[in-house]
Each structure stands twice: as C-alpha cells, then as structure tokens.
Length: 189
Image 1 (cartoon, rainbow, N blue to C red):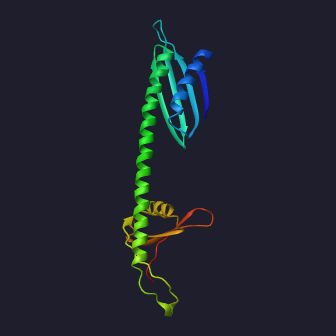
Image 2 (cartoon, one colour):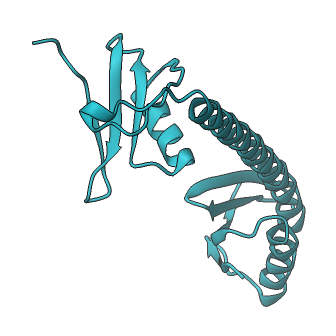
C-alpha cells in the first residue's frame, strides 16, 4: 500500500474527510501496483460571495512518473469525486501507454530472436586459418544510438552493431563495466 498524505491549506482536514479521501484513493490504488506515494492537498479559497471555492490537488508517483490532477467545486466532497475521475482517466491513459510499450518491446524481442536464428542458420563456413570459428551475417537498419541501446538491452547483449542514422556509418554501442554505455564510431585511417 502506498503512503497517502492528506493535508489542508487554509483549512483543517476533518477525520471524516481524510477517511473519505483515503477510501476513494484505495479504490484507485487497486488499478496500479507500483504507486510510490499519493499526496492530496485540500484547500479553501475565500471568495467575495458567501460560499468559498474548495480546491483538491492530487499527485501520485507511479514508477517514477508523476500523475497529477486538480479540481475545484463549491463542496469539498464533490471536488474530491471530480478530481478522482480525472485521476482515473490519467491512470487509464498511463496503463494503456505501458501496455502499448510492452507490446512493442515483445514484438522487437521476437524480431531480434528471429534475426539471430536466421543469422545462425546462414553462418558461413569457418575460416580456420584466421582462427575464426564462426561467421554471423545479419541485416542492420538505420537507428539512433538510443534505439540501439534499447535493442541491445532487449537482446541481453553487452554490445550492439547498428547503422547510425546520425553519423551515416556503422557504429557500436556497448555496456561499460560501470553500467554506463559507450558508443564506437569508426573512421577510416
């Protein structure tokens, strides 16, 4: 369960209001399992008219991403309900984005496996005299170093050869011992 912080600004948060907010957020939390924290700020903005404006601001930290919603109404409970609806829509957008990314990753991973299998099947006869025991052929497509790094991670390799669309040359990204990445851009001597 994520840490829920409910605080008031220009008002005191009653126990009933705090329980209401926590109960509503508990329902929202069941949709996401990686919520680090939930901050709720309830405030009252006085107006010239007799009733004041009730403002609710909710901020969630999910997997390092911030999801935030704010709404105002004449009643604090109504404002909480409205902002939770907004937050729910944001959570649904976030989850669909994660799902799309997961599908893309799985597709890329499967294509990479197929390429590896094809390359292994097409391996040329070994060049015994040079000490080369295996030759691997593969197709490369233009991509950025960032895409190549992501592809390398998806394959679980320590390096990745690609056609660098930025430098229009074959390049290599590799994982360094300290966990960072390196980029090799060869130049003709």
